[in-house]
Length: 313
Image (cartoon, rainbow, N blue to C red; front, side, top):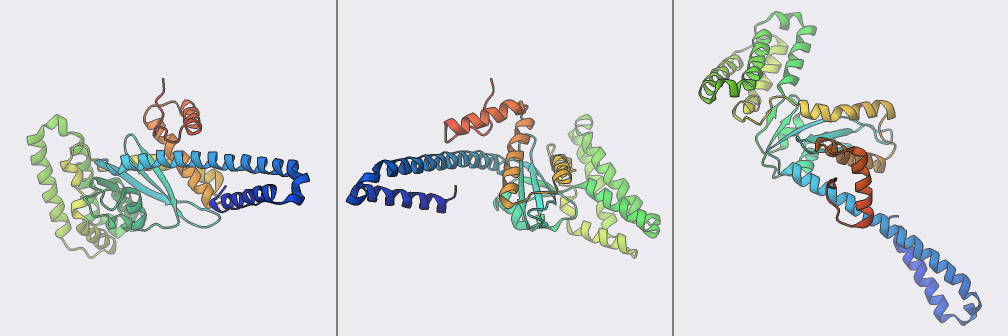
């Protein structure tokens, strides 16, 4: 029940109460009016209970958003999502212990700013090509796997690009960057730092060169523009150079989209995103999903301020 309906119920109840107390000619119908008032009170109580449940759910999500906004690293991605027959986007922001889904008609930078906050101080790992994340005023890491896919796809379509200098060198260098990061502990800090520096020097040399082939020219230009975002992960042990975490979070949603075709209404899209966020987060935290659903429902009924994900015995 929305605010307008609640207001109408309140006004109706007040009218009936007035008629009962002030109108003498309605005295014979007091019993009938009393039943009407009783039903109105029941509906109001149900509306208040529903509002309490919605408030509790929003409080859980707000706490989940707070966890993401305070995280040092967040993986973010987006995919298409239809709502009420109209094209839109499903956004996902994920950490090892939390996932937040959001359905929006926009793919612009204001959406990710809304989810993570304008003052986000961590490092998001983002898709290699989407420009929406450029709006975030923080250090970022581009997904190198996305970049590899773009290089390979361009080579398959263009024999000239595939046989040129830029494609094999950039592909080899990106793979070496990812491989080196995986060997940090084995190499030790001193040897790792030396090799990472040499790889960055090679990358700078590759991007400074001029290329005539259109695909090489286009990709090299974008890599130069986002140069710092290609190797930020090299100098942070806990920062990943790929966006696999966000892709894993989006994959179940893509399956659901193929089955359902999206959402039939805005309210349905919001409800799906909230429930999916809470349940995936429960799974990430190693909690039994059925037990979590039960605990969440009980907490919503019994208190207006339940835990984000209730503790299980």
